[in-house]
Amino acid sequence: MNARSLTLRNVNKSYDGKHMAADNVSLDIKAGEFVSFLGPSGSGKTTTLMMIAGFQHPTSGEIRLGERAIDKLPPHKRNIGMVFQNYALFPHMTIADNVAFPLRMRGVEKAEKERRSREALAKVGLQGFEKRIPSELSGGQQQRVALARALVFEPDIILLDEPLGALDKALREHMQVELKRIHRDLGVTMVYVTHDQSEAMTMSDRIAVFNEGRIEQVGTPNEIYFAPKTRFVASFIGDSNILAASSLGDGRYETPVGVVDTKAAGSDRNSKAELLLRPEMIRLADGTDPSRQAMKIDSTINYGDNLLVIGKLGAQAIRMRVPGVDARRLDGASECHVTWRSEDVHVIA
Amino acid sequence: MNPFVRALALLIAFFVAAPMFIVIPMSFSSAASLTFPPPGYTLANYINFFSDPNWTEPLINSVIIGLGTVLVTLCLAIPASFALVRHIFLGRELFNLLIMLPMIVPTIVMALGYYMYFGQLRLVQSYLGVILAHSCIAMPMATLILTAALKGFDRSVERAAMNLGASPFTTFRLVTFPILRPAFTVAGLFAFIASFDEAVIALFISGRDRATLPRQMFNAVRQEADPTISAASSFLFLLVLAGVCVWLAPQFVRRRSGTTRQPLENGATNTAAAAS
Image (cartoon, rainbow over the protein chains, first blue to last red):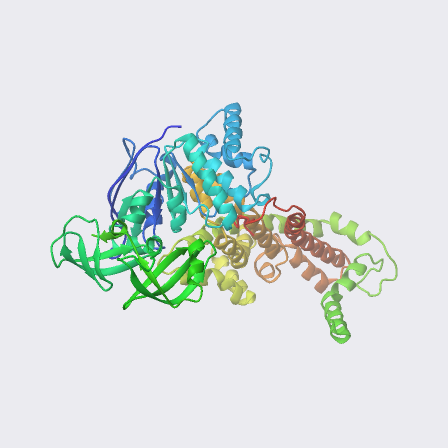
């Protein structure tokens, strides 16, 4: 399948002339890449996707698909495949006619049309469903038909708008694996909109985190998780402890829990910063560890495989995740000793 | 259910249906005037209804005017409904109110208005005049049916069609129209029925040349108590009943088949896109 790159250059969108639904969005998506747009509702991720698809028009800026500027084209001339949140299958057509629809629009000859529709349905594991109508299929099956319909005409790029949002948890995980497999097999460029951070983490080559119409950060799942560039990214993705800090130079910071060492490059003395310490980076320390600190336990939530401990280090509220096997040591305890490695502490710029 | 409530319900149902219990047997009556109960039974009234030009001509007039009303009503109500549901424009509320007005204004007031206004336009005693007047009567119901269907229409299927390469016109032809066709059909059917059993306006403006069936029935009962009128009434009733059944039947069938064909895996959610 022909994969193309997608470039957004200073794309702005405002519905009322005051509030920016998309605020200076710039992004380069490589051919064959799987990129997620992650953010809360109203963050501009769906608006941006709609502008790529052509259902919204940018107030200013440029959108290029490969070498082709597409921001002035109507939706039906863009050659983009899209999977909608509610599937948007044609209820009055059979599954075969649904999947063949884009080929019919392109005047593909009958035998070829049937062959390619059959192949597309096979790719999503729905052979033998050709004669059914959409309402006879379950949600997961309908979503796979929508996917087959979006890839049958070999579009330059496939857009997915929260496609798994309406499915239950088990089916959603199954479809995540399916989607990744199809992405790998076809090598097509995919843009995936979601507000579910774990979905974005597990599936994406890169994640673009949206907030209030802007892209806060673009990076691999690990960069986003371990090295967020803004406080919003740090708190939106995963569970977090964020410590207000002022620099003492040489990567040392004064914080409410005392002086914290980091591996960050030197910064100006007394400059303000925030430190990110993920709950699973804080570990139980044995009584002899010189770096240990006493943590007061307020409450615990047992997940079985891990225990979330909510408590205080001095005056600072702290959340800590203890692996289930170690958690039994905390039974009934009101205090424990904790420590962390300085290389785990991330300085938010 | 409480036996008293059940009896009351039956009584009300009987009261509502009573005229039909009289008119239908009477249509088979052998008496030469309108009498109940009938002294004997015959098909003479029906034979007369379908052969006497005094009855067949109004029947044909009613069908022509009814079909004309369907055409005019749909041509106006479909664009109006799309505008009302999909666009925000200055005076939308007022526009909606104007369309609904014939439902509120007494028919006789409108009839009088048409009588005087169409007289000047020389539209009295013409098909066109009656069709235009009946279309006004049919507009509110047709618009209500169409706007309800459009509000329930999931526009993402239109977006999907465009995304897959269909131009806006092709999208309407292959997606929007077929999905909304049941609503169009029902709106048309209601327009036909509204015209077909309308008497007041027909009395005022259809004249002798373009007399509709209800007008002829009114004349017949006033002038000569022709028993054919009972056959005409029964026919009118059965036609309207058939129309309503045509409307209800597909819904009934769909509901029945919906319970017998279950989706194959859990987590089923149907596309709520089907109109009506």
